[in-house]
Figure 1 (cartoon, rainbow, N blue to C red):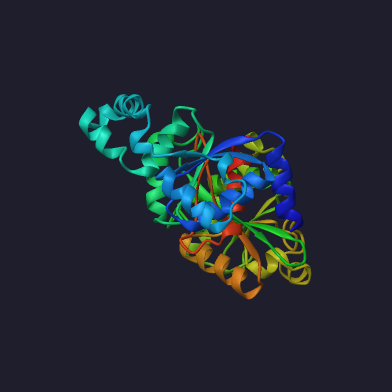
Figure 2: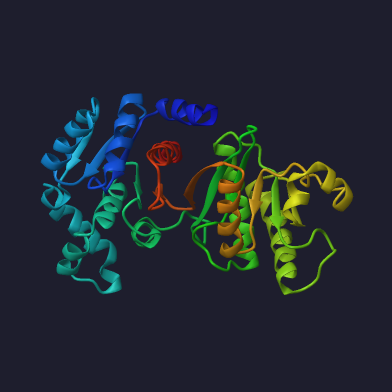
Length: 329
């Protein structure tokens, strides 16, 4: 609750305009009500305005009238937005007719509103796949200068008050060492932006020099690249690895396995060697430790677009909107 309150209070300091393309989903309307009641973001919600207003009345929503409801296919700016999209993508062989057809997709249209600076960010995925949300962002917004890939993190808020950052748990299946290093540095920057002191553990099934094999060697190479790159991008960033998870977070285990490490036992940012490990671990911690998982938070794009799980709860959606607003700030 404390962490969620801090997110919302920080979002209030400079309110951002967030697109919610899935107004057909009741959870989106309930989350919008909480956002508007707390007054920490402006919202544009896609869908049939009459249907959304009727549903809001049935649900007893008192603040929903503060949202901008948009039947985006009838938007007065639709043709201009479609032409902008055509100009952006014509080198890929699309025609103006292709552009109009593509922007019938709510996620593509919402992403174009962000691209055209008619909004600051977008949250989608309650009623679609991760690919549905991320594909338009990658093709339209693209990655920031210096970022070769987009990646993701989850903020894992534990019951004892600790906050861990887990990456990448949603986008890159098998990052190579250079990509792992990039994920490590940008994840540390994300952690810092949310008030978390980053200490980066590059995780593996062995700690230090205890293990051998191609998987461990890849993590060792990633650590070397990350340490070198961090001198320019994030001076004095603590990075270490390979580290097993227990050595990364438990002081006693760290003392026996990695006694000279500045990260072991105190890690706050965990970088997993692949998507398989990361996704399994975040769900295990979420369920077994009853942790709050906020994310996936997408990193490396020129503007924030974040994905929701199709099983997202209303509070998950509210938190993701707050995170997106902070990224936009």
